[in-house]
Image (cartoon, rainbow, N blue to C red; front, side, top):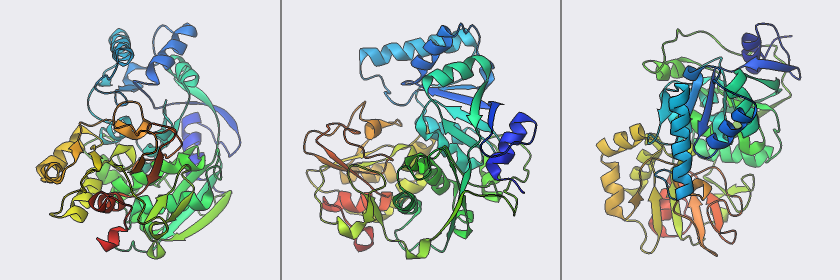
Length: 416
């Protein structure tokens, strides 16, 4: 019997053949913490009598959730983490570069065949570059910081094959929302999603990141796209690494295989308060909104901002509507700035903020008040996620967000 990509990655890490369901102690190639989870992980590291991290070159520390510090406790967390980095000789430290997952990817810190863990659930985004990447809790991260390894049960894989060409104004976010609606919020619990098919093969890295990012919204341990010429072209200049083949064997055993046709897809919207409660945009068109948030690790890349600019054209955003746009990183911000998009957004009435998580987790700014409604390009719409528990959050693509921001109500981007 052949092996899946996940089985091959764990076999590489453990230096022996392993199979789905086996519990292994596997070494990690990189470990990421940020300003919310980092202090807790460091505290657990200390409680385990940790003196020196396993490898300061493999520890990544990024500030993104409350940046700049929006409270004294947040500022204290930043100070605590900076002191730890200095003490341990950790050089992969960024204070203002942007959302942690985007920065990890664009710096080439996650690559094909690697096992990467992060103290954040959306660490699974790194599967876009062919890594097995997964989020872990702060206690587990404390263990990793000390020992450089962690126990895993090797997850079985659901093969997700996507073929066809996206219709106009439909893209990767609509696809992954549709898949989440089909599989369900717990349909892939502790499983890996392997994204394959001609649509995925032709998809750029930005779209692959969007799809892998939201694998966890189906309960998945990881999402992964088999590395190919697009992957290696992206890593060129970011990582010194010779390309190699990493693919599932033809006779690999999958837990399940699902097929989707992107050609039949309409713009999708996840309605409150569950990510898997997904409908065609027409079913909720006309719903008035108070805020549109465009950004996050899911959809804050240059390609997303370009699509927003194309939908917007020379129009303005709706009066009385808060439109918050946040590029995912400094690099993405500069690309959008040089393309003229930032100026266009500001002229249209948006608040364009420095790269960070922003309203996504409801912990910094752009919070919703009781009764308010938001349409967001982020990844979660749980009750209270972006502010008041009495607010509502709809999730959609950058194109749908742009159309909605123009009209002030949820709008099919194909009609703008």
